Length: 277
Length: 328
Image 1 (cartoon, each protein chain N blue to C red):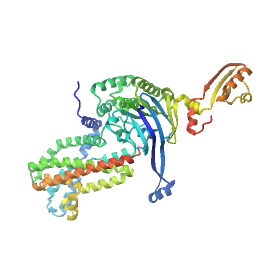
Image 2: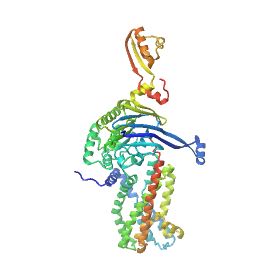
Image 3: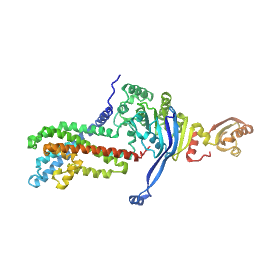
């Protein structure tokens, strides 16, 4: 008798199928991997201009080298928390009635979405895993950018924070995407939300150099976990006794988002009109 | 006990009502008005296990909305639906493993991968065992003649070939109930015939209960003994396909071939409406209760080579039913 497969096996097959689909277009795959670096290069030039204008003096304790390291780590963290296309795809599924094909199958729509997106992320992580050790090595040799070597706890906390970053990032997309149950057309709104997320995650400017009142609010928001906190943890800017509470709050946000997504999904489906023959 | 029980099922949509043009669009920004559309209005019917029932109605009649409620995609506004004892809107996995919905225009296959990958994914989603999967796949690809296409990218397949794979994907888990919504839409006549024959054979062999909607009367005539007709969300007929004709068509067609080159039309109008009168052959549409008398008189008065009495074509009857005209 054949061995019975575990119930979650189907999600593994979704991931594997999506990975195959991603690899169907090799040129797109390679270009995507190469040009991902471009925004990072732009940010480095931008910050160089800012620091050069003030005689390379630190900004709120962040030196130019700190800023470069921050931006590189941010690139990695956003590689986990940013899930492009998820919000718009979910809203399109709802608006155009494409959700029908998922609703009739014995699976969870969000479980499907997680695996579908995760497959794409795995490709990015794979490329990052191959290229980033080289980037770090160059930076260490050429400019001694890394003034702080992370402790074991910081490494572990960084890895956990990346998991939190992914969970918050994708669930935030689910929340915004499912708004389409109520508003149908949300493309303009999506653009505004993504801009705000870009700012509030610390991707544009590190949150700690913002005005005090603003950064205290943003420290408590879930968005810092999408970029700012993982960077700060590995840069050694979070004291060891704060690591637990910082990650704890992150997990709390993951739980809150999970609850919100479930409530919105159930309420939304009652409004769903399943348009289209 | 029926496998599908529908009792007073209704679905009301709330849609925005907008005045035409730019002015209407601007007004809609400030003062939005809504209107209620009764897509399905108190429909009731039962279907026994193994039946193949045609679900007929013009566009917008409420057929697809009913199928969506039966498959748990939509919540009914009121009334109840039970399929295999399950309430579809609860979307229990146990229920979803036992039915399938095939929509002619919606695609569940992955466009950039060979069809076999989508089929394998469905196998895993439905928890089909390796042995059953192999057997079903072998059997269906053989029957639908698409075995050699399993490894071809879906985007490179023709519409008919894709539809065949859609059917296979939906039947891998051997559902007890199958909802088919326009499965032959957009296909050429050969592909339509293939799909039709497959459905008929599948129903006969597996005793799967099938509820089928189609705009092609050929599909309905070839497959369904029983039809449920709805229009404007309400059920207007439920019974044998042949009975639709008897109930809604009050005429029959008499085709006569005359020996001596035909009759002038004015003589024929006495018997009924003259539909055709050329080359010694006339087709008359005669009220049902006058058919016997008319045919006797024609045979007595004229020299007749051949006479044939038949029902009005089903398409014509259904068209009249849809239009609300019951006098044909």
